[in-house]
Length: 621
Picture 1 (cartoon, rainbow, N blue to C red):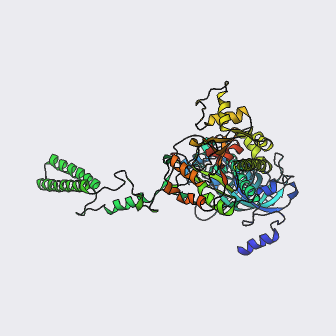
Picture 2 (picture 1 turned 30 degrees about the vertical axis):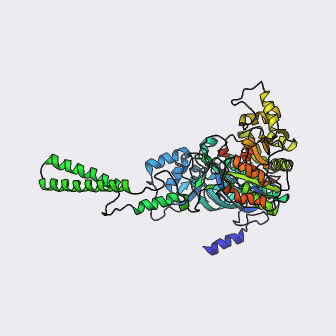
Picture 3 (picture 1 turned 90 degrees about the horizontal axis):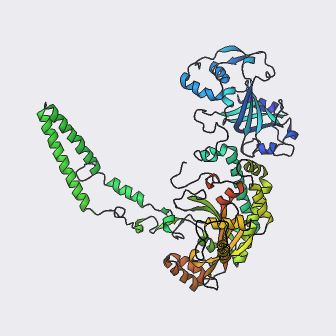
C-alpha cells in the first residue's frame, strides 16, 4: 500500500509553487481566492485543500474518464445499495428514512459486485468548501468514483482532498474550481442532530451552539476581525516602544464593589472533605439524612406487616428495629446540635484557613499591578481577561471579558488622550485595510453603516470636553428626554454619553476631569480639589471604549484618598511603596477589547463578539 501511494505521488507531485500551510501541507483557500485574479493564474496546479461543506449540488454530470455507460460498484467497500437509494433521497428526508429503516438493507459480509446504470445516479457533487482562512469558498468537484456522494455532500462535512485547479466546467459565479482526484479524509455529519444544516440562522440562535457557530460565515468573519484587532493592538504598542507584560488573574486588591467581584477560594472544597469525613458516625451508621430515610422505610415495613397480620414474629422484629433506628436518629440530632458548626454554616468565613490565607478575587483590572512594571520599564501594556460578577443581561455586559490596559511613566493626561486617540485610529485603519471582505459581509448582514463609522474615526479629530461642560450641554437639550437627569457629581449614564457622540458631535468625544467621588482613588486630584485627571473616550453607536487617568503620585494625597473612599490602607501598602521609593508621574487606560470588536463588526450584542460568552446564568461550554 505504501509503495502504491509513493507511485501516485511520483506520477502526480503536489504543486510547490503555491504557498502551503507549513505544518499540514495543504493550501489555504485565501492563497488561491485572495489573489487579484481570484485564482485564474493557478489553473493546472495540483494542490491539497481541506475544509467544510457550505453548500452542495448533485448532478448526473459527465461520466468520469475511462468509465462506461454502466459502472461496477463494489458493495460494502465503495457504494452499497443502501447508499445508492440514499443518494436519490433529498437531504432533508434522509434522516427520517434512517429512523424507520435503520441499517436494514446495508449488506454485511463478503462484498458483491453488481451493475448499476450510471445515468440513474448522481455521479458528480459540486461542493462549496471553506477552510476559515477567508470569506470566499472554493468550488470542489467530486465524482462518485472517488467517494459516495451521499457521504460528502451534507452541509458541515469535513473533506481533505487532492486535485487539480481548473476553470469551472459549468458557468456560474465561480472563477476557478478543484477537480478532485483523491479524497484523503471525510468527516461525516449526523444530519439529524447537526444544528447548522439550515442556512442563515440568526445570531441569537447561534449563541446556543458556541462550539459550532464559528463554522458559520458571519461568526467566522467576526473572528477574523477580532484577530486583526489583536494583531493591530500588539503592532501599535510594539511600534511605539511599549513592552508587553503578563498580569495576574488572582488578586487581593478589590478595585470594585465586592458584590461585583468573583471570589477565589478553596474553602468549599475543604468543607466538602470535612462533610465526607463525617459521613460515618460513632455507631458505624450513615449520616442523619440516611438514617431518617431508613426510618421512613422501616415504618412502611411495620405498617405492611400490621395490615397482613400474618407474621407476628416478623412484626415484633420490625418494631424493635424501628425503635433502635429512632433512638439512633435522636442521638445523632442531639450531637449535631451540640457540635461546633463550620464557619460556612454560621455565615462567617475564616479566610486564614484558605489557600492564600486571605480573601482574594478574580481581577477586575490590572492597572495597579501594571504600574509596578511601568515604574521600572517605562511604557508597558497588557492584554488579558478581567472578571465582573454583575448579574446583568445587558447586550453590552460580560462576566468574563478581554481588556487592553497600558501605563506610561512621565506622561500626563494630555499625553494619555493623544495615545488613546492614535491607538483607536490605528485599529480602525488596520481593519479597513486588512478585513475589507469581512467588513463588506458584516455591513450587508448586520450593520450597513459599520464601514462608514470606521472611516469617520480615522479621518476626524476627537472632540475634547470637560465633564462639567458635558453636563451643561446635556441640561440644555430640549429635543430629547433622558431617563436619568444629568447633574454634576454623578456618573454620566450611557444614554448621556451616546447622545453627545451620536447627536451633539457625531464623532468620538473625550470627556475628561470627572468629579473625584465617581472615579478611583488613584486618579490624580486636580488643583480645584473637586475633580480628578480622568478621561473617557465615547464612540458613536457603542458608547465608552476607553477609560483612563493620570495617576496620583503624591503619597500624602493618595493616602488621604484611600481613607476617603473607605478602603483598607493595609491592602495597598505595596502600591504606596511606588510613591515612597522613586515615584514617577504616570498615566494609563483600560480599553474594552470586546466592545471594540462589537463596534467594528457592527454587532448589536457583545455575546456575538467573543468566542465563548460568559454571562449570568449562561455557560454552555
